[in-house]
Image (cartoon, rainbow, N blue to C red; front, side, top):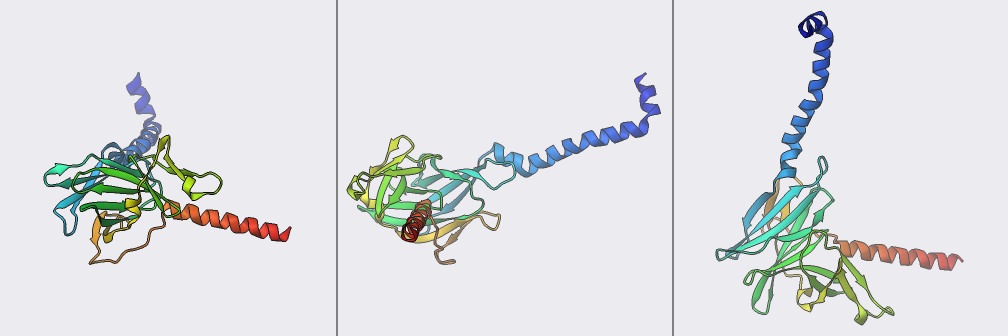
Length: 231
């Protein structure tokens, strides 16, 4: 009976099969283009210039079409591996990260900075921190992919400034006020992630989230002053 129906309606059955094949084909193409990236972590390792250590940058796509990623970094030093430290989730597409080396109390730290987050790792102890900056003060907290910094202060006095990442209170740490020596950048804007040393390309300024927030605060303050004058 089924064979008779198919033989009598070959044209209609062919069209129906073709229509059913299109979404299957699209699903297969999507998987090879995006799906594998969302299922596995990818990594890129490079040697830190002038230091017998390397840094591993790891990322995983979190959106089927847009360039948005969860990210981690890890340091390998003297055959030891640091924990995998989270950077804040990248929701802004392909961009670049700047890398610096700063020396504090005879220990060298690598500093990784982009518009979303700042992380420092001690190349000796392999300890890592998420860094927040406000009004020239620096705070540290455990790295986390959603550890956005928030600040409060009482009576407009900077000595009352407090910092938080979620429910975790940031610890004031003036050591990381030093920006460090620029050693290069991790750049993905060409579509292929690669480390570009400072000898090949000079430092390109990054507008951090703190800078963007400060600019917005100044804009609001100017608008309020303008309204006060007009009234």
